Image 1 (cartoon, rainbow, N blue to C red):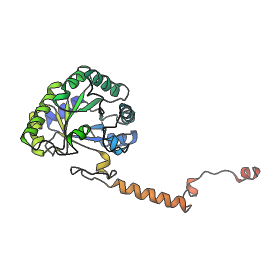
Image 2: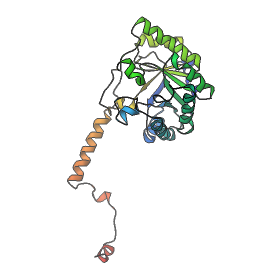
Image 3: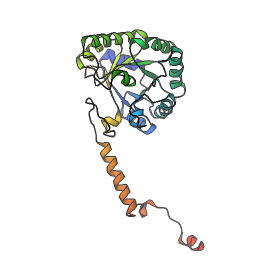
Length: 275
């Protein structure tokens, strides 16, 4: 059964937790979908874990549409949310609506996600008014890494905590159906969750949120450049892949692969006629 924004609202009402993971390609999205994951985020984190950038700032609309297309083909039941990349919505309300529309029309997403609080509420409202569901994102907002001075925990002072709560209420008022809360103390995230009617999705925000999201390369040990404190390692797929690659390399170089079982046959008489 297809997960929708109504599914999210019902989960909030029934206090049922929501699972979300990032994905950037068809085969991974299909595996997640078959596992029962409620929502797949095509995150601009692809800048780090797929494209090798230092941050998400360099990700383009072309990148996001390309990867969203692939994911949407594999996620038949999961709600597909696509990140709006840096400068695709900050420049104007018009740009925000146009680019959000492209992620649905060209990319096949079911919803979009954008970073920010009160300052992006005009964009959220306009996108929602255009019939496009919006997931907001507050706390640590990676696209603002330069302004924030790095990837730091947010909302630790009274003033910062108050601003996060105000931002959460503002994006709800603007029409967002959910909000990601990243790198925020657990008690603050729980308070925000209790004050909102919409779903909260935590990443480094404790267990009090309505759902959780992780970058799948982090939780599978496939990305080792940096591992945040909040990541739980569910498997060491990265080590398994490296081991398999090494074995393949050895097999090729010692001529044990391909073996007879991996090769096609032809009648010897045909070959003899070619000499």
